[in-house]
Image 1: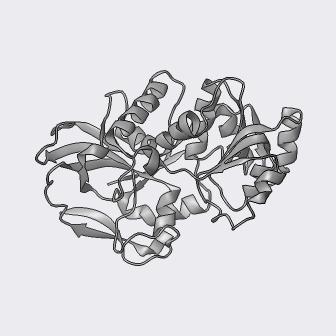
Image 2: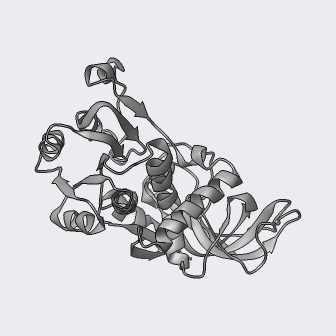
Amino acid sequence: MAKAIIIRAPGGPEAMVLEEFDPGQPGPGQTLIRHEAVGVNFIDVYHRTGLYPLPLPFTPGSEGAGEVLAVGPGVTNVKVGDRVAYGTSRGAYASERVIDAGTLVKLPDAISYETAAAMMLKGLTAQYLLRQTFPIKAGDTILVHAAAGGVGLILCQWGRALGATVIGTVGSQDKAKLASEAGAHHVIRYREENVAERVKAITGGKMCDVVYDGVGKDTFIASLDSLRPLGMMVSFGNASGPVDAFNVGVLAQKGSLFLTRPTLFTYASTPEKLAAMSKDLMDAMASGAVKIAVNARYPLADAAQAHRDLEARKTTGASVLIP
């Protein structure tokens, strides 16, 4: 029997229970895969707590990597034995699962299962942020919050490779070192420094073209205050809690700012879009511009501890579950 983490009611990490289940066989357009590694992301916490509600019961997780065990009728993009990964299909915290074949991408031999499980959701998020939501060009100045986190480290690396000046925010000296090593030109310790004032000093008053903010409530106003007139605020996560309702007139007062709240699921809404984004990400990795650091590994049964560490901000880079 396969095993999966099941959530029957929203709650803390203890709401996740490991249970045996029968994944079944793939139907039309589906595949059965065996996971070798599963990614852990903050959106999994939002689903577990009910901040982003899902129908109950459910298995959390949106990204994983493994081997195709069986294919259903009409599947042509993958075959039995293929190494595959995905980042946009919920239900990943499991040893095996049936999944829509259209969500899968084939893995090059050079990319390990652990790296793949860590790169898909975070790497594809970085792809749409840097290449689509606000396409970065040489000379841009960008602010990356949580620069030592899973998405943040990729944004620092890729943003620098695209020619941007990268400013990162972090909460400790150890994380400042990680962000700098990943490519951040300047690092702000947000617990000790005023972010907007430091951005003003670093940029000589010009401020940033774009802010990538996955933190949410705690950083929202500082993010707006770090932008140049007509700059773009990209709010893509709520690690500190959801942003409170605010008067949109503030955007006018602070310089006719743009505000967007994008999601990966919208940008990768078709197999064709997903394939193009995945190729761009893998090309960046193949060139050496982006390296994915897997810094924490947990048995699937220890998913609750993985969430505790993530919520306590004890982790850097990516964390994976090993079924």
